[in-house]
Length: 291
Image (cartoon, rainbow, N blue to C red; front, side, top):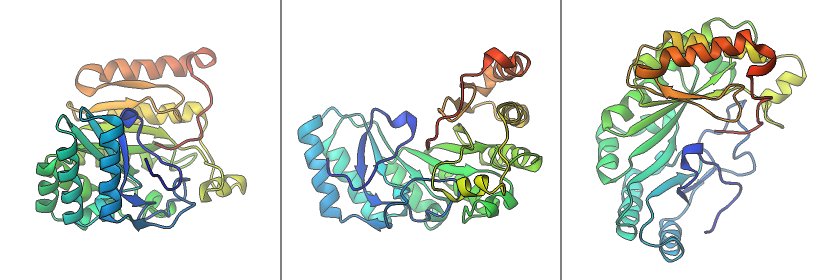
């Protein structure tokens, strides 16, 4: 396939065909993010995208099951263009069962709920929303570009449209000593009601604004056990039964996965065990990567 720059996708999309629809991220100012810094955001032409779909049909065959639309948030494309892309994908791959994409808060809010429903009906099934935090001061500090209310509304609109929503949050994003970040994050997740929660740990990625803040002592990172305490508080304060928890990202000190309805107490027990048995319970230092 033809790709421009390094391609990123969520871990669950490892077996998906990666179709690059935009170059870069339409926001691309978050202090913690090292993705897409080598390119300026732009939309690829529809003929280019359709050409890649035709190439994929030849190389991957008609039985392709999953597609992920790259780069940062393909939802920023005009609705009519996205509908055409979805039409071409399902025409080329009749067994296709999932098409997914990252979604930014502002680009999601630029579409009406009716437009999002159109996209769902056309086959856009799965979305990944970077919530990061429910704390407005934290969101401002990391230059997220959206308030907690805007992020909440974007997530609620996606859920209302019928798309599957994974909300991604970052442990430790409030820094050492922060008390409001994780409680506000649990609250926004409870109100948003996503289908899955992707949990990551804040790790300074080289050459990002956050990394420079850490080097200068302007941002104090939590240690592993403070981060685990945050994860415990998060799970204790989430009240959604039908929520899948995925804390297996390589940035995390302790990989966890389960469903709140059946596994909440077990997940909390695993965290408490790690906190008590500090010298043998953690998997190691975080991976300097992105979700």
